[in-house]
Length: 318
Image 1: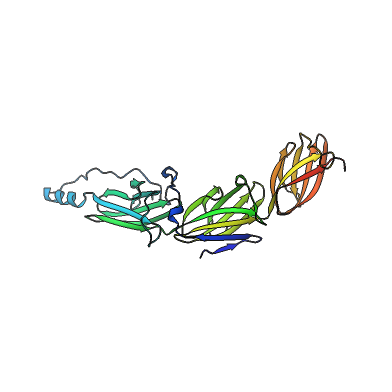
Image 2: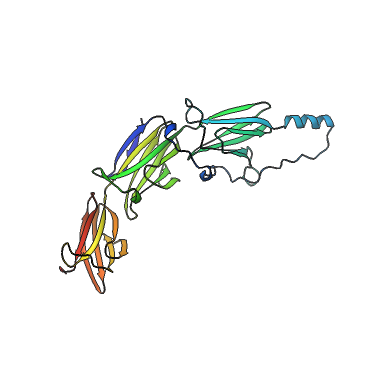
């Protein structure tokens, strides 16, 4: 069962869906990230080593250093079938050079990675979406068949306004970060659209849901389980607002108005110019200012979670 712990003032709905593999899209290999290893340097020199030696010694060295067949497969969990698409394989030298970099010696974007490598130690890295695994690989004479368990799961995120009020997908985006203290978190994926399936290494992640681009956001820590896709809905306590300056209630919006919205402590969080600007604001108290020429009109408002609403500022009451 997936576990989710919500931050303050957050309602969270989590649904676990089994059998991850059939729900995953085919990933574009061009978008695969460079693995979390030292920056690769050019491939190692494949030229012959100079030095004196007998013909017999040279023959033995050639035989023991001849490339051997290496076949790499990956599965989502230990009990699962091999993944057939969407993998990126990279093989690195095992030992960094003097600058701390390791050489990238081979790469494949096939479901099954097939290589010819001289015997010796290597580091193999496989990426599946944003799920990544690195492990040691020791190539020996003869066939080398290795299967790696990705221990991957996935998240599909969405948000609604408290009360199950839907939010336009164009107003939503999500960030996924590593768990832990705020100062130690690292970005895993950002600006994700709602309902996008994100494949991740199993573990706990810090999720941020942003509604609009001002101050409406909610956060939660979610656990990704191997082999499972989790649908999580984070509930926003906010509302989408449209402003208009009118000479009477229900009147036509006046054009060419400069708008400013301030929080109750005087901080400006929104500015725009026009007859009918729209924004999203988190629950709370605000001061709305409408400047028309040399005149400034204002109205205090209280935002509560709910459906989109229209806010009128009257010129006739000042």
